[in-house]
Image (cartoon, rainbow, N blue to C red; front, side, top):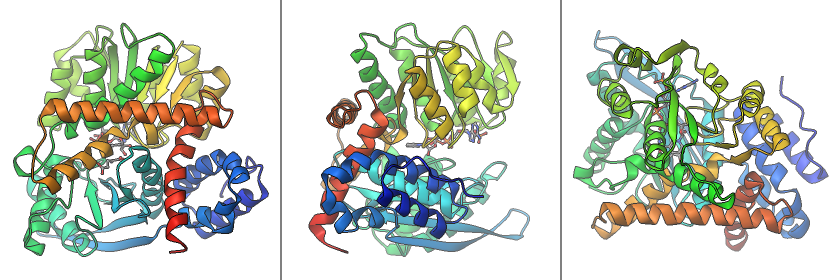
Length: 453
Ligand code: NDP
Ligand code: 2IT
């Protein structure tokens, strides 16, 4: 059953939301992401009736193109397996489609649409000329051999290569797609097209990747949080921090938070979480996750003082000052939010895309918890992908400090714009509203300027 959408005041937006749920049945994540943005636009359409007249919001919730394809691949046992691949080319008003690829069993049309929709606003917030896209496959990389991963990536790219290009659509990584998978897909694209172009980002440093891209989402998240804390005359110093996930985003969020003085006491994977009151040993986590591709439960073999608990959701019961959900959508629900705030958590910032449920967001609002939405706080990854594209076009590489400094400036700028936009719309401190409106305005104005296309 689709939920009802009684929270929209405007008759126009309410009808639009009704049509959206009817036309995209069962795509709950997409409904959730769209509703959150529409809720933020109530004040905008009062000030800008031209957006209604020109159908801008109806266009924005409809992907420009949705590609769905078969991905056959051969297992080590000689059997043929079939997965489903997707690419949602959501919006190209301000630049070529840009966004990651996710390999995870839960990937579906609705998930890819929610991610590409969010990406449109996120990319706009970075200030760089990138439209919104997202893709992936319902392929589960867990337990697959190196050769199986390579064959899957090559088959996936054989089909995807027809639809992407350095000036049309530039994919990157996301859950289950890291530097290894990007390398295999880039190699296959190069072979098919017979040209070496910046068609994908997150590449290895030896073949066109950018310094800091690997760290960028996690570092950017912490730069954003620093800005939020600064406004309250606080910092990361001595802040007990809980971070979910133990993948690319979580690891580099932990690294930067520790560098800035925080005590990171917990991390998780989809099976469970570790709690190390002494502060987690990040070198061990990196060895387990980046090198061995092991489970996080192995952490306690080296640190018997730490605890491992089955079930990822229990991580939010750990008392902390700061919580950074960096795993997957809807991983932090209303109950978890109540537990966090009861235990004194003062700030929640989304490293993942839409990790907090609408119920959790209500709790944070009610309790006055400082909150940063993913489309603003985790934009550092795609922003640095944008910097990778610039370097590829220039056929030049910037040094580490240069990229890190640009990333930090972009994150500070996103924070400032989300903050000031919230104030302009009489919602001081509401970074959800501020980020949604600031991201929306640039895309909407570009769409208006380009006419009904
Ligand atoms: P990774 O694949 O590197 O890591 C994902 C992590 O999340 C793994 O530790 C995984 O554990 C864990 N996880 C998956 N499902 C669950 C679950 N149900 N409960 C708890 N943990 C879970 O992905 P990334 O770090 O790249 O991405 C994480 C999030 O950040 C995603 O939401 C992604 O969309 C978002 N993001 C990523 C960016 C990037 O640049 N990579 C940029 C912006 C946002 P396990 O190994 O057991 O599956
Ligand atoms: O969700 C995201 O912003 C990403 N997965 C990164 C996308 C990118 O193109 O770098």
